[in-house]
Image (cartoon, one colour):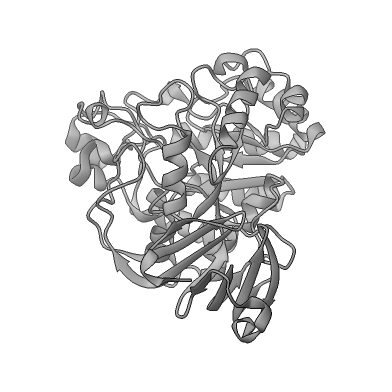
Length: 429
């Protein structure tokens, strides 16, 4: 395959240049201008990427494919299709399946079935058995079986001593620990920020102190344990400040921001109802701008979707009864461009850094860069094309961004040198 005339943006090497790329046997063989004129590159599949950006395939560190246990919402195959459409070539699935990923047998089953899909599917294992926060899993055994990290995502670790012990073990194994930071003691109704909007809805909601209290605790535990600790889906400006402060103290802290948290505020609940309900909830404009500031200064080093499919019937329930979460794989790049790059908060290089090489290096993944002899995992997109999400390849459609005009259209997704998603109108043979 030959990709010609595109603008390569690679955050690993800080490269931004117009070039051609030649791929063979799933590997990037050559990066140079005007390869299309050389005889050895004729009679190949050719993508003319004139006016398009070529970037490393996106890596999403926080995904729910609901497989096993809840495959009416999503499964490995439909999740992979959604990822490919969004330019995502690698995902890390969370462990809160049914059964949870707390044993080698469950982990190996998922990884074996994942090999049939076109994208790279990595799997995080649970920190505790049955996600109860009481008995630690055998982290060493799970790492040997292929786990890329540990998390009880969806459920906070309420026992600080247990959390610290898990961090220490993960540090020994050089594996990241990802934490869902919401103390249920403060929450009456989850998924909606406790504030002006929840009052209009006649409910108490989830105050930001529920997140901030656990973030403060776990930043200190991260500092003392030395572990690489990920604060998942950060939603509060105070939480961002805490991560910034403890990073300065030397803690190996990382933080995820979701596209919905840097794009929307709690007001979206009034417009979109349960489609804007998620854990942790959308908060205030001040919180949103603090998240953007954290992205700008590097406090937040990961952009992840928390792709959380639910059925139409489930989301049709009342605000207090419907499950929390939205899908995000098919819109994440576009929301990054629309909400961060075009307003001038981040450069394209900075956006892609948080969606490619940063997650790859944290989780020790073999992708995330465009250099010769590296795996050919790429996304090719038009940053200026406006499009409107109306239909999804995911089994679910629970998104507040349906019908919204977004900038940044994925034209091709390539994984292991194979085109796995394409707008075929610009494909040449």
